[in-house]
Length: 114
Length: 110
Image (cartoon, rainbow over all chains, first blue to last red; front, side, top):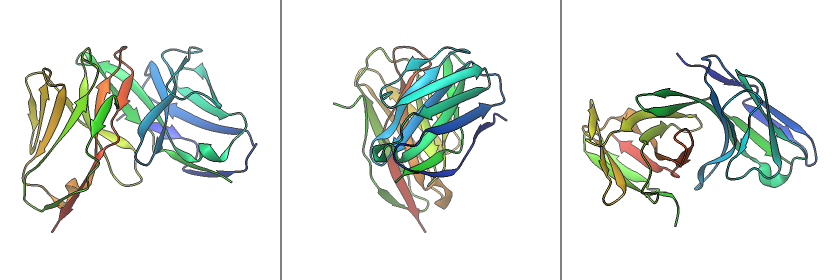
């Protein structure tokens, strides 16, 4: 079974703090993704990576950065947390099967910024 | 217009009934389509891919209508455990990037 793990299930941080969210997958997938999910808005892509040290901006990259130093690990960084970054953060990895890519998710990190 | 649109529901359906929901997408070049299921406070999980010819997996049937740019999900003989939010997903320009609908909430009542 594919396993995607995230470093924390719940996190509370103060405005202005630097926040690190870690994601690890154990299936040697090339692609990894960071999303945030807010009620009524669906999943919105923040950043993704298709290889080690490669990163691409998604739809809402402002206020975030990422790091992928190893294939299995993809980190999301909030340089200076703000209250509008309170959200559920979901990490995913994907592989190619049957002419398409299936994404597998970690359990999510519910981040509250006060 | 949103790239992927779904009726948010909730759909309140008695156990044993058949329920169907649609999803429309705006990118006519999309090639990959999925339904994911998300339980309350959990991560999304792949329910099924949607193929051009339509496909069935047990009580679940997915259809694709390219001309009208919508996909559908039909659930027969619904169970209490089917209660969840169903997310419609379509690929973006690159095949590995996906666009997610906001989800349709389904509640199965005994």
